[in-house]
Image (tube, rainbow, N blue to C red; front, side):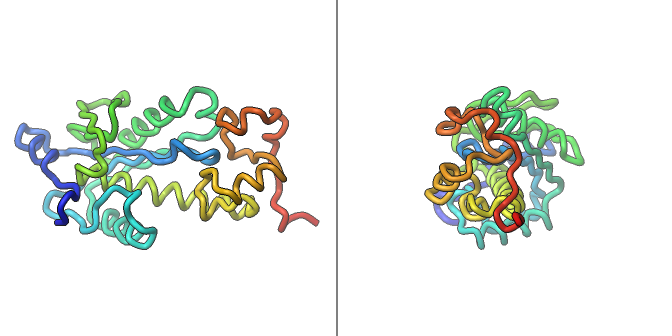
Length: 218
């Protein structure tokens, strides 16, 4: 294992105390101007820890995709949840992220005895939990969850990009990249944009109406 890489010590300490099934939980997508926030929960098999686990932000797309496949092949259970831009706008991104994490844990096919959650806040869970600051860089189960959430959200954004190709969602994942901002200025927001995020707050509500991409227009 590389120096500074996440390890399995948090999980092993909990297992020594009788918490046999430990889930790692993380979310991605707090910062983008468009798209959902996505969370994942992963229960790793202690006897089959996949290689390449790390904070998803530090991995190339190729390495992340390979790690994702290894996680899917070896994990005991995986749960994924999305919270929509509309739900984000109705509350705030912090509450939306916590909701997504709670739903991801609830989506696991087997109930965890304890959840290790990235960050400072715990979502409302039906099991005990521990919040770990920078957990995706310290804890392998959380790192696995960060990879799953990132891959799943990126795939969703690629799907959205097929309907709205002008915004470059397949390359910028909804973040405020130059191409994205230029498309916003020219075409206005799509139904997938977060209208409470700057610079979208200045847009009139009517701008949220669905738009067809240029390639479908006659």
